[in-house]
Structures are given as structure tokens and as C-alpha cells.
Image 1: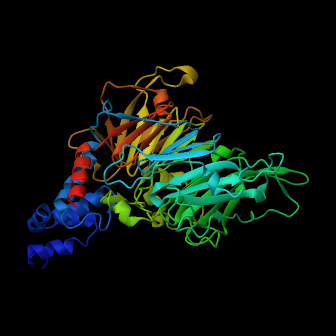
Image 2 (image 1 turned 90 degrees about the horizontal axis):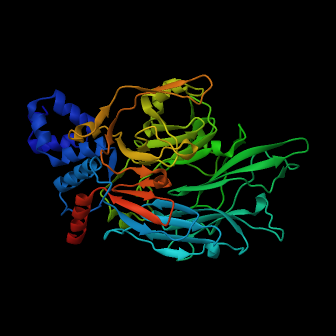
Image 3 (image 1 turned 30 degrees about the horizontal axis):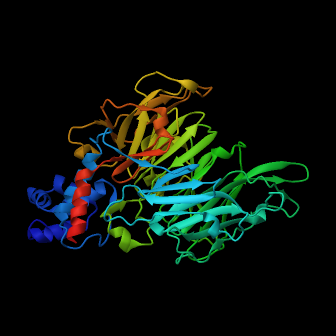
Length: 531
């Protein structure tokens, strides 16, 4: 009956299917459906988006931008990642700072000693929403003598947040003097979407009235995604006969309330602050790394986060760093402005998460789909063992440095040592670059470049006393950039990748920027001008 319908009706019916089912129909059904797919740009666009694990941005451009043009841009962008030129770059001067990071095409700097923040667009595009600001975050605080612990800047929401503690005459602070203040990056004062200027902390659960919280607040981390802001910190609890170090994490829905009861805490065991990290997964999930990986649901910040699953790690870790790049439009509070820049966004349920560990020095590359499809582990009420989730959903590599990897969507940029030549502290003298694409369509669109890696790979953990080995098999396409440029280890003080750029920070006053998709960028500019 389907084959007897007019071709335009077949197209319309197939357009409601997931991309995998569209492909199945063209492979197992008649030549008629195959021809319908080949002649329909809309169906191919659905398959390309799904295969690259992207989501379309509604109303990104008006109807004058054809589906066939969007399809070509999407394919050009993907293919350009396999053949970019590491010698073709521009440099951007960086002011003095002690913390630097790149977000949504903007360079963010924080100089703690000068008590200043700077943010500006890096080689801005004509259609890009830009913020350029050099300011002191002092204006956010009610106490001019406060000590700042961490700053986050989110250009997609025009948001700046600072975690600080007020101090007494002896430059001491305590647990009750810790605050988070919010403002706008462009200097407009109070954020129009914030419930208030200051986020107030809740009492740490399980602390007795006789316990004394040390003035040593340890490490603090601020992270934000959409309407959620989280503060992680370590602290020391001193009782009459003993003391212990704890970690605490509190989450606010900053757009709706300045208070929150969404609090988690636990003992740091082993007593190492750097063995803890966390990241948001989409708008309602949180992943906490410690001795294991715990997945929480955070729909309601008036309640503690709900534990959904616990994933066991294969080795004991002493230091952890989570590297995860959420797309800049997935949580935007400014959809009209951001829609002018892009036609698609990463699917938070199908991305790549990297966990860098130390002692042993490993890189875990993990597919986020396992954190959204818990039916894969149905019946496992206790912690999920590594051999039930890890080998099929991860790849593990050994690395001498945490600075030589960046993640963006389904792509991973990894710097590796081409030989065994090492320098001081046994760090390799030179590195080359490798791009790994974990999206399902990577095999089809590679056009003969790179190699498809489907077979399992095994690494020996030499730092383990028991000489453990890890075998993983998450498929990907690997492109080793066969060019004569080698990077010294100073070239990897920081690496960031976004949709069409790579940013190298060399540990000096220069940021190196490599454009990945020049053809797509030109076409996007032409479309923006025509509209």
C-alpha cells in the first residue's frame, strides 16, 4: 500500500520516522522507496542530522534557505574535520590572567590577583552574538573585601557568576560567609532572568550542632548549564575526637529561586580533593565522579537529587577531570539571537564525554547514551559493573598529560606522541594531532580518509601493581593529521574545539585559532547577508 502512494506522500510518511528506520526502509524495501530517498533532500537531511547525532534548530533561517543547501553545509562541515591544515592559523593576543577558557567562540579570562574578568569574541563572525567586556567582578559583591574562589562566564545566557567568601579583620572566613552572586556579562547589572542577585547556601546535611567547620574551605568549582548552577567544594569537619574531609555539591535553579535544597555530600575517600568532579548532562541530569560514577536526576531543586544509577569504574583513581562540551544552543535563554548563528545543535543524549584520570594516567571516552537509556541495564539494582557498561560504550587510551585532549559533540581531538622521545619529567617532546569521530555516519562520510576502528583495543595499565588490562570497543573513525607540523608540550596548556574551530593556548600571551570549515563559514555569511 505504501508503494502505491504518490511519491510526495511517501516522502511525507517517511519523514516521521527516526533516521535509522528511514535507512532500513531504503535497504530492505523496494527500489521505489530507495529512489524516493535518493531524490528527497529532506529525508537525506533527517538521516544526516541523526547520523551525526545533531538536532535541528527551529527557525534558524527563513524559507529562502533550501533544505538541499543545509544538507550540503552539514556534509561539508563534517568532511572538513578530516582534512584541515594545522599550518593555517591566526593568533589572538591574551591579556594577563591566571585562568583562561573558551566558551562559545569567546575567550574568558580571570585574573584573581587583580580581581578582574575579561571576555571578548575570538575572531567574531558577522552573524555571531558578541559580548566584549573588561571589568572587575567586585561590582557583583556586597562586600568589597571579599575573596573570590571561582568565576564562571556563560556568553549564551549573558551570565557571570562568582563564588566568594567575606573575610574578617584577620582575613579569615567561615562556612556561613560563602555566597554566589550573579550578574550580566555585558555590564547591565542584575540579570533579568535571575530570581535574585545572590544565591544562598543550605545547611550541609548530617552536620551536628557541635561540629566545627574549618576555615579551610579547600577547593571550589562552579559549573552552569541552562537554568542550573552547581557549586562543588571540599571542607574539613572537626569534631571533639576526630576530623574528616567532606565534599558538598549544591544545585540552584537560578532563574526561579535564590535558595535550594538540592544538596549532596559525602566523605572524600581516599582523602584526595582531586578525585572528584562533576558535569551536567542536558537539562535534568548530573554525573558525579568519585570512586565511581553516579547519575542523578535534578528536575526539582527543592528536593535532593534522585539517584538513577551507579556505574563502577575498572580501576582505583586518585585524580579525575571531566571534559564535556555541551553545545552552545542546547540551553540558550536567547533563542532568537543564537538562532542567527547555527542551523543545528548537538543532541545531549548522544555525545561523547571524556574522563581524564591520573595514577593511572588514562583517558576514558564514553558515549553519553548509556546515561539516558538505562533500560540497557534493566534489573541491575546495585552498582553496574564495568564489564556490563564499559567495554561496548567506551574507549580507553593512555596519556601522559591532561592538557592534550578536547571534546566537542561526537568529536575528540587528541594529541599523541609520535615516538618515545621524552624530555623533563618523562613528558614527550613532540606531539601530533588525531581527530576521532564517534558519530554513526562517520564511516560513510569519511570518503576514503582515515581508518575505521571497530575491533576491540586493549591497554596494559603499567602503573597498576596487578598489571591490569582494559579492553574497549566503541566504534570510531580516526584521522591522524599526516602533516609535518609537530607541537611541543607547551602547545597544550589548553585545547578547545567547537563546531568549526580549534583553539590552542601555548601558555604565553597568544591563542592560536585554526578554522576548520572555511567553505561553510563563507556560505553561512552569504546566507545571513541574503536574509
